[in-house]
Image 1 (cartoon, rainbow, N blue to C red):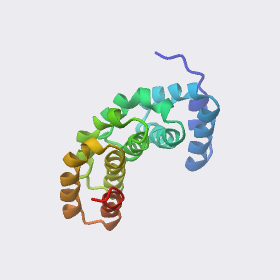
Image 2 (cartoon, helix red, strand yellow):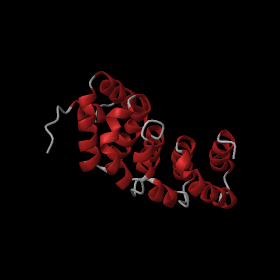
Image 3 (cartoon, helix red, strand yellow):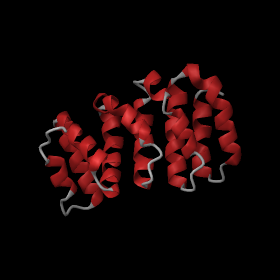
Image 4 (cartoon, one colour):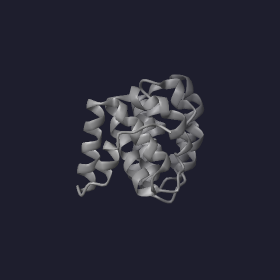
Length: 175
């Protein structure tokens, strides 16, 4: 077990509003990236609420400091289809944020992301769409394989916001 400082746990249990709590945790990690280890330990062992908050933190950290999150990619992939909706939101967005810098590594997330394109939750489908779109945008080698699947998703998707995630990437890659 990793020896942790409990700084993240203290912030998670603080009386702050959720958005403020996430912001404080992200800022703490930006100044001391070793604190991300504590986030991952809580993600592994915490309650579903704590896991959801950690997944949201991952989303922001992966955008600004992808190198901090990439060592945990396999763990993120294994939790794409977690039972907690907030985890199903944050983890795919994190993977999408990693796509630009880690093309090959994130590719292995595609099967789990495709499962979430059929989820009953619009937000879960949107987040899966974001990740898939980011992977397609940055990885030319996988476009021929994924574009037919994206077209199938577009045909079946009823929510215009989710459809637009896919349509935007197809336009950006001139497909």
